[in-house]
Length: 178
Image (cartoon, rainbow, N blue to C red; front, top):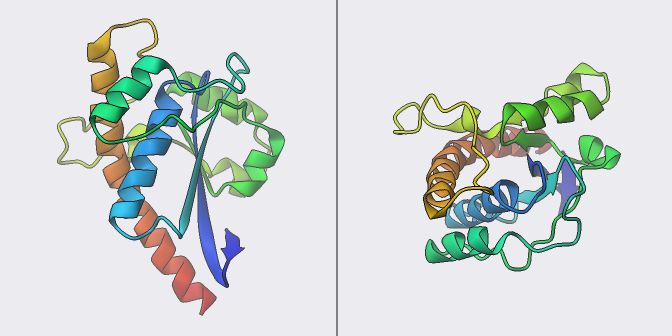
């Protein structure tokens, strides 16, 4: 974990294929949920894509619209591709589906501590959630409004669980730093 103002700061990277639908949505949702519990200054969140299809572009207008309806502003986010430094700089690299997890795994340095950073977002869906058991956050790009709404439902649920996980990591890091 990086050090920030004398305290460790946790860094989380959300990853999908093009970084215009799912991962910026997850970035925006997680940032909002962290702010709600007072962890915004302790956890840094970013997003990236496994492919360079949309580098520099804003999130898909449909993703922005549906997120905005729920109070999440994605307009300032810009797509970028995952790079080698991400594997060093981030403490948790969270893929939206198996294909992107596989792509990350193929690019990840071959050392166990770094490989353990790779996870799927749906691993964090709480057991009591109606979305428990979901394996992936599906790509809504080629679908209609219902797909974007489902992605938000699933991402919100998974981010609730991720906030619990990050809170525990933050407490452990703070205890170790003192």
